[in-house]
Length: 325
Ligand SMILES: [Zn+2]
Image 1 (cartoon, protein in one colour):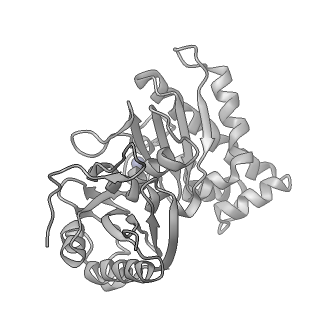
Image 2 (cartoon, rainbow, N blue to C red):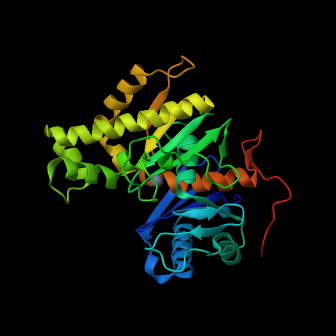
């Protein structure tokens, strides 16, 4: 009888869906399952639903679980493994001790990241920017998120706020959802694309996705709001490249699915205002889609556990992993 395969799990607790992946040591996805997030029922029920889903995965794809990474929307204390600030759609989520709960239930180490940091970890581990060492990740979703990968590791800064390019001013004068003015988010989020299109046309109610469909059919106003979003994203790229010499950029989130609308405008701006390094910048759409956050969370767990593939191809674990029982 062979020893049980060693696996790590990644959990993405989003506003509507909780996605769980089971990964091998090389982060190849062995199995995945998603369930609705019971966001209105509180943190204990949400984490309970994620753990039930993980147990179902382990039943049908057996392995020896080494650790769990969790990616969650909102502001998180990655060190303490708890949620600090959550949106109104989550009940009893702010303050919830995510990693302590998972460790108590499963008896393996657990780690927490915010979802944008986890997204970038995933794309660097197995996605569009696999193996790159200097990357800015941006998510163009309902809002705009950002995360930084410097010298081969996530850089989150002393307050966990590094890479938050969505809320830097200098992108006009429009009021942002955060209360600030002229932030990138006012031009490049899904909500902003919808708002800017409504202002131009007097027709409200169209989603960013519908506006992308109209752009593809030649709607001039629809094309224009996507061009503006792309140019703003490019300016954020140039700021980051100028400040940190970051070479590679990966753009995810629902708005990035309209890549054929965004990319020409991004590239045009980068050509007009080349970075001070004089070196070309690589800008790519995310490639892991729904797996990115969960896979990135699993990647964090693997990194923290110090798992490495030994010379024999087997899995070695560093000593001294704090373990709860
Ligand atoms: Zn803002």
